Image 1 (cartoon, rainbow, N blue to C red):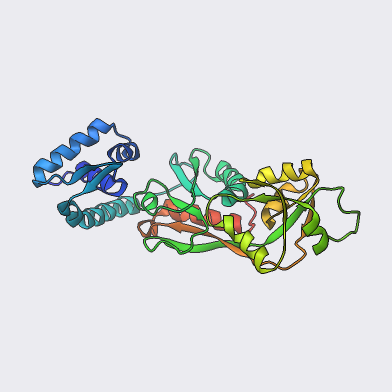
Image 2: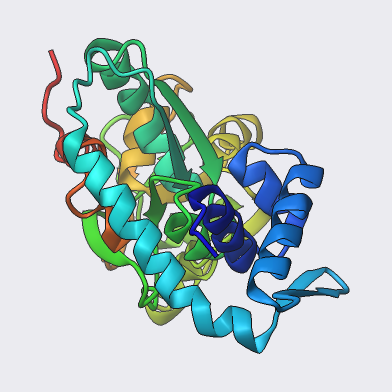
Length: 301
């Protein structure tokens, strides 16, 4: 068999997705085209390669045997082409795709979009929710450029590093505290709380921190999004404990007080993850450096 790169890409996509329809969407091809390519591979290699399963396909022993070599070969080809291709953000029309957790999306999407408008005006930026957990295949298969969230434990197949850390503040309805008054523990525990419980590992993080500190929250309502908390706090005359960067964003626009938590709570990291095959990719490096600058509060005039 003479190697056909397009067939090998189909094999690699189906191997990672374990679903022909999803692999076709990832490759930008029709399902019939991908099925036809698999048929050619089966004939050439003398093996079924993938067997139908309830929710997709499962690889045969032969497919599992050849998959690492095919993945490595495609990776080397990709790196070679990328190394030879100059990258100019100002002229790039590339679509950058990011997987972001709910907190990361709120604090990073606005400044990132503004930075793209100034530095890469022809490029596209697409943000997709990361969901409760990060599936390394989405980055390994280059369906996404990188992911930002909280990854514990970090997937072994990916490069994961801290992007920034944050602490907690309280957003409080304006009429609760008189000018100069302090939000003490007794008042904190008595006020009706809007509890934010987004998907993922942050959902239990604050609950554990407050429990460890012996700090009670008088829960009035539980919501799934940080921005919902601000409007709800204003409506019920209550309080919410949110990351400090969120509090700084929403307190003034919604007429809320931004107050310290009456006990000391730990900080938490926001991490960035990408696949090792993007380590030297100029486009990915540019994107990572841009995010690091935004996270550090660098001006992008």
